[in-house]
Image 1 (cartoon, rainbow, N blue to C red):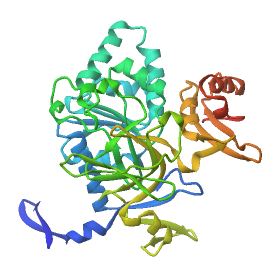
Image 2: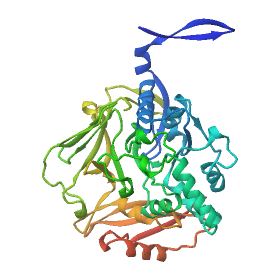
Image 3: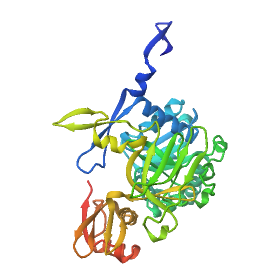
Image 4: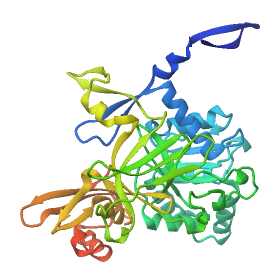
Length: 426
């Protein structure tokens, strides 16, 4: 069967022949590169079917419509699905050539913006929120009228403020909520999957004149004001998520059918370890399934890119029974998933299990630290010594002693790094 559409050519209506529908389900549409591969960036090949599924997922999750306008401050290889989803329903997207705190605030507040370009959805990396807070303190914090205006505008005009692809410091979350009256909702996704875990907007609030934090319906019906940073929510529409133990056993599976509710099946298991504060919580490796999941990858071989079919052992393992191994360790509790750490960032220090992400989240909450890498240095006595590399701004007033003091103030002794290094960002 062939899909056809009517097109106008020089005033004449004709039918346009296109490829078979099977072509669009298998044919490659976009090539992007994962930025966090250990050795070198891994190319990821998305099909038309993958991209369409990712778009439909976000359209249903956010109830997108032609009155929406999105301001995305993300790298282009992370925003393609969200951008396409908004445009496909007749909405608008505001793009900025480079990040500038003043311009970003102007866009958020709709200053000198046509009505169709007034932002209703804001997606940004955590570092962007952090820099916007710094800009706010300089520009608005001492002006009581602007402080009140910003809270009222963001509550009434912006339906969603969200982040993904990186850890959000608690201090940034709470300060942003004070400034805007809005929660920063965290979504989980990868290049290979698109956004797959998160928080659906409440359809009843879609066109409400007051679209503040109450516009988000949590999977476990928790009041939005009780939302806490680090909560990844539940599977988005058309996505199935499960946790697998270190022995390969299925611990829990949550499936969100398109147009349906989240169905979770709990399989009682023995405690498989993890942070003591998560006692009674299910912990395992997150795996994802759905039509938004990439089925083909590419690899660099002798500087040439070759298509990898199903004969590739790594790909077969990564897509066993239709599930993609994320390599991330997550927890499941009370209807929500929580990110703990990458499986490669779990270290043993004196018999204690330490998540590298916990150390990173504490350090990036420091106002002068932009990013952090946590390293496990093998040690015969302790198992690992912890080291950190902190990226700081050129004008940052911070030294190694200050970073050490900050760690000992906010982390238990066994989680404090012993090796420190700083790099100055350009």
